[in-house]
Amino acid sequence: MNVFRLELKNTSKSTLKWTIALCSIAFMLLAFFPSMQTESMKELAGAKMEGIDPALLEALGLSELMDFTVITNYFGYALQYITLAIMVFVTQMAVNSLVKEETEGTIEFLYSKPISRSEIFIQKVLANILLFLFLLVALSIITVVGYLSFSEYNFTESIKEVGILYSSIFYVGLIFISLGTLLSSLLRSSKGSSGVVIAIVFGTFILGIMSVIVKELSFLSYFSPMDWVKTQKLMTEGISREEWLIGVLTIIICSLASYKIYKKRDMHL
Image (cartoon, rainbow, N blue to C red):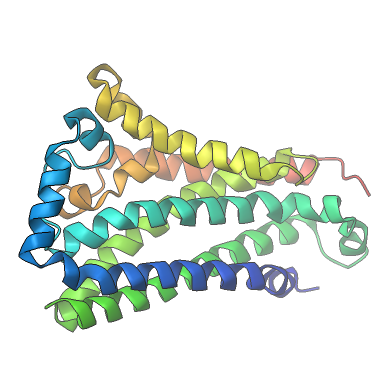
């Protein structure tokens, strides 16, 4: 039995809805960019931000007043919130992947087929990663089209910048998929999993904010993957060696742990 294709079929509809919604938001934001280049809009944005508390600006990723007439600053800032939505989606997809068969009562049908737990686990994880890639490829295409249509970037420049942004988001997404898969192997039901997903994603996001506001807690940024891919940081420093190490270790440990737990767990048929 091909669990991979079955998983793609069962999850493709929700993935398509998320893809259309996020691509629409991204394109609308890019279409608004030319309005940011007018002198009046620039002055208005600057005046509004100068009136905001510096600590709050730092928490929002605006430690330095950005020039939103530059598309990298403008779209990159908006992208961090799109990334939040992406991480909620991929984490929810991963959390549901293993446990939903028990919740929906289809696990008995699955086990009646000549397929091992190892195959079920691997094929479901691969399906999740492929659907995640589909979402990012669609967003990348829309972003490149937006850059070419609404800025002075040429094709090569657009591809290079979009590649940096979305490859970094892919890396962070793999971390959340591994965390979601681990949760899926531990949970007995997918009911109520949305609250857990939001707690994980927004919890790590808040850790990043705390690391900026409270200098003594700056180490918390290492536990906030979305803090690693803020556009300003990506374009100047990139992802640090420590962040690569923490992320890769998280993916490996969570994947191995969820695999072992899933193989040994008692299924409620």
